[in-house]
Amino acid sequence: MAKFLLLCFLLTSCIFADTSVDINGKHSYESFEVQYLKDETSKLSVEDISKNDFEKRIKSNFNLGYNKGSIWFKFTLENNSNNDVFILSLNESFYEIANLYYYDKKWIKKSNSIFTLIKNREVKSNHLAFDIKLPQNEKRTYFLELKGKYAYFGNLVLYEKSYFHLKNSFGINILYTFSLGIILALILFTLFLYTKTKEKIYFYYMTYCFFNFIYFANIGGLLVYIDLQEYIYELQLAPAFMVGFLTLFSNEYLETEKYLKRFYKIVKFLSLPFFILGLLVVYSYQPWNKFINNFSGLMGIFLIILSIIVYFKGNHKTIVYTFAMILYFTSIFMFSFMVNGTLEYSDFTRNGFTVVNAIEMIIFSYILANRYNQIKEEMIITQKKLLAIKEGNQILLEKEVKKRTSQLQEGYNQIKKLLGEREMLLKEVHHRVKNNFHTIMGLLWFEGQKEEKDKQKFQSLRNRIKSMSMIHERLYKAEDISNIPIKEYLENIINNLVAGCSKLKIELKSDIEDLFVEFDYALSLGIIVNEILSNSLKHNSDRDSLSLDIELFSKENKIFLIIKDNGRGFDMQSPADGLGMTIIKSFTEKLPDKHYSFTLDDGVRFELSFKEKGISEQ
Image (tube, rainbow, N blue to C red; front, side, top):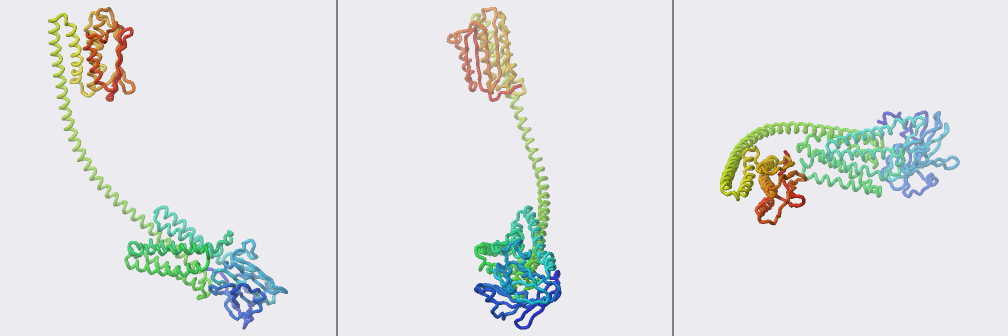
């Protein structure tokens, strides 16, 4: 600590009212008596004060507690050393007024305060200090006026100038800087743990560390180096927020929801007043700062008792927490007693809290890191259990899948067998239908031979029946009875009709796409093509030649049929053609979204289109 970095001070006291310091070659002087006087009005001038009797005496390391108004100190210095330039330091930084007076033919005044920028200070230090020039072998009396909103404590120390700057570089500021470095490292460490776990306990502790950082930067007087000293009172919200987040952190770490369920919400509620006090101290430093100090101690006692109860409830890991909290709040109580004037001001009572706080935070970080490791180990164990369960389930699943697959395969084989039997039956039906059609065609042929004048009519009937017979013949020979290859079917119908017309020279152009269509649509197309071509051949039987052009194609999910000849045409209203047109219309109606037309211009042109959902290309 800083006490071990400083040289020993010489304690000298003058008898009665003539209190003086004999400067005789030492590097620093810190334990000497001074006289003090309270000015509750803060209106007395140095001339007024110098006429008063300073009856009360204290040591130079003073702590007078909270006082109204100003405090005046009186002390005498006698220089018996080889130097004549010294620095007088208060070792504190928080006073709003720090005026040093001495009489040299007239009253000389040196001013300093927490709000004085570092660049404007006579001594470039965060601690309030003054340059003193005292010729050798001379004696001089000084008056020091102090005023602030905080308690009155500090340590009047006289340094040789060179030694002061050496001590200032390696003294108490190093302690605060080191503590702030530790806190900053812990903030980053806890932030890492929080991002990994997303648990609120790490958030509470990280926020507690953050306000710790602000608090120590404030009470160490380090804000003056970044020109933020004007916010010294507003930033006193930091200790209130520290205790608030420490309470929330403790509530989670002690697992009160598990071990003391009724206390869980109570502890959370008890953290709320500290956040309110933190906001109130921004509005008005006093009296709220006193409330923060007093309630912080009470909360510390409460948390320690709570941790002990939880320990005996079975949460034995709280023993480290309890030790850290006892250490932490003991230092807080010592600091509070020092501030209130009960304990003597010393490096231990003044700065012991800083050291203990760093130790306490390191302990808390350790238990949080240990908690994180436990969570990771529990996660690994849980993952192993889940993997074991998964492997077990996978084995059961594989067995079930094999069983279900076997059942499905058995069902599939049965269905396949039934479908095969059904298909065979259908093929047998279509075979019998084809044979029946052939029988009918044979009977019609015999009848046509008897009646020469009706021979052509019987031939037309045979062609119609044959077109239907062909498709049934296709069905019982095909492997897939659901779709009919339309090209081969229509070409057989066309070739059958053309072959039966030996007297007429026919020029045939056929362009039929390789399409598969449903049975009903194929049958309708076969009948329609048979009727159109039969009519064309019949009406042009007395001619020498006839040109026939037949197209069938699919486009945009529709089937298009176009049949064109160069014959003389026919009268669609003629009764003789009534049956053929009736058949064409009847089978056309069976087609979905159909549209058809006859055009009589240089022959007959028939166009048909219909929507075919089941269409597919070969």
